[in-house]
Image (cartoon, rainbow, N blue to C red; front, side, top):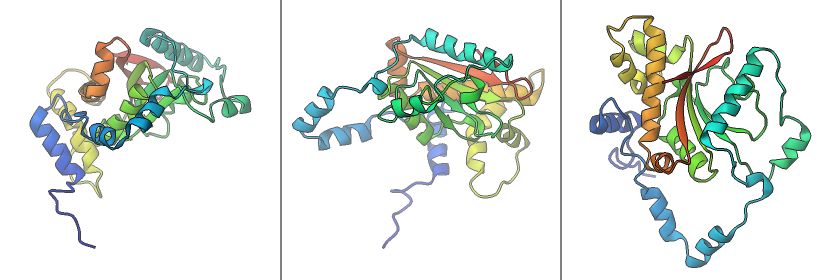
Length: 256
């Protein structure tokens, strides 16, 4: 079997460079969300199949959340307060909930979080099975697959809130600040965080903390550059927010 040329099958690093070259530090993948894949799939659907998709009634478990973006955010933050004060309710975590959502999901919030083992959104926000749609990746970076996952949450699951959450002493951000060679393809994460490192040069305060929060803002911009996500925001159906998780206290604060 012949290998595809690099032009047909670009590496992730080349994709990252391409996105950065077009948009600059503001958005790494600003060219994403053109709908090319979606249009291709639409062309392959017959009128009958399209009608079936449109007329399909969602199950009870798949009924989109009726909460507004602000209500969804309030629910998350209230859950975090319970977690911090050691008053967790552990909602939606029994077998009955498991069977209820087995047929489909309708999370009220979506979160792009770091894959750090100490950062577990379901626990930190005191939520249960099927309540939040979580994408975890080191450095909570919004690369192609991560953006696509959140587009699914917004467009298909109709999730009204999208949160990007960084955390104290993030190793991926620290590595981006330190620089140097890294094994394997870890450098792709560093490359995605680098604009945040540049943005905090010379600023007062703790460099790592400043960069972690700047990285949250950077990834928010990349998500908002998606045509799917930006359209939902403009329609008032979605809010995109940034957050900062404290490993020492478990408290989540919003990043403006």
